[in-house]
Image (cartoon, each protein chain N blue to C red):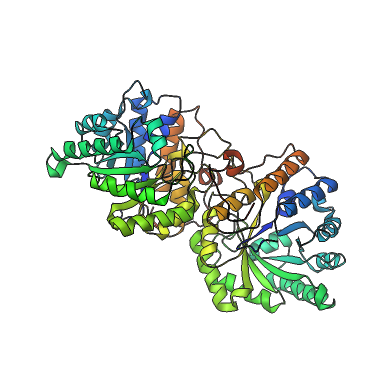
Length: 312
Length: 312
């Protein structure tokens, strides 16, 4: 394993696949996850423990956790919307569980049908469920601050509210929190300000990761701000899948391939081998021929004489 | 006029139109330039003084300079490849003339059929031609360091070569130099390093602007680096025109609309009114119906409650 400067957390198998209509076969998902891990991606969010009737695309999450855990060195992450999901997850023991809390309570009520207090009660329940297991087995619990940078329903979300929810998630038992630009509203200034404020309030170890979207083309500019304030884990989705209803290139998630190129071209090691990363892209493309894959770097190719920071 | 923090230099009428097949009618160009200026864009590169048989798309540059100069407050810029072009330009007196020098001499020989020394001799001639005019009328002369961040022919271009050429351009009589990522190779690290090195060698006033491409999706990340090291003028092209042979969204130039959104969302005033900017985009779209216009922000729309830094 190469020591990395920035950790890519690949969310395509969860955030990507849940947003597209075709259901990827379990065998294909396994091949894709293996290919991503073989390329050096250190963490993969393989799915979400939600009822299969709500998201049939992710019904095989438990099987994928088991598959991922058999890959040496890979951190296997999952989303759990509530205690029920966490209990299901704990039967297969991923390395990390992320529970989302929408900082916009309007969005929380509309999407999860829960108030903030109800979500926090779930988090406390999840904490207790985790702690019923031996220390060595316990997954890390991350509270994801979704709609942190603004909400399509509420509009502006005040920084004070983001801080309050970050603190409450930590008090409810999260090991750390993450900032999530659910709506593609984030600006570099917000990324800097919110991160610094949370670091000051809760310590740097309470916030190391960020989930950014590229809806308005600002994804990698926001990554630059995240790097500036010392975040070390960045979510991204291969081919930018998880798309959005907008125009060419306007993917929802930031594109893993372009993010890795950005970081490596700046001299920041990601541990990723580009040839194998593009092989993983081919695996994805073959499994989902009807889904458009985004990414500038895959189309334009590398600069002549390009030397990534990670030994290839 | 609003005092701006960052000056957008719109290069669409030159860099955009020279790269696409359809020839935009002069009347349409004038309407577009007027609409851009009405939106608050402070500088527009309206064309290039090259022989009409080489670039028939830009044959009306002189007329556009005259048109632009009639718009109060607008800085009218043009490209001049050589002394002959500069002499033509000086008959209509733009506010700024940019002469490109390709830091990769291979690229210079292949594209301009000139060695560095020959280009520098042209620059000295242009300086003399400018100085034959009264001080108050003289256009600013910028030397553009093209292929500064790497060359498709030579590959890596050493920083020392960029510095050497920057110094020689200043010695040859340029008022300032500009960094240009002709090939879409630039990384934020290079933008920072090269800018700092030139500032140290030649002073901050010798380099205030940068021309970035988005070929590998890194355009706005590179803008973040440019802002960090104090550059204050950023080139961009409306709709990202000037495209490239690559995939959806893979425009050549960075997209004016997305750049303005980035800056304004960070609290940096550009002086641009968004409604009028989108009106200028409609003028362009109507004049060139066959040309695809890029841009994430025009497609995704603004965040709810978005408040630009520039009063609208």
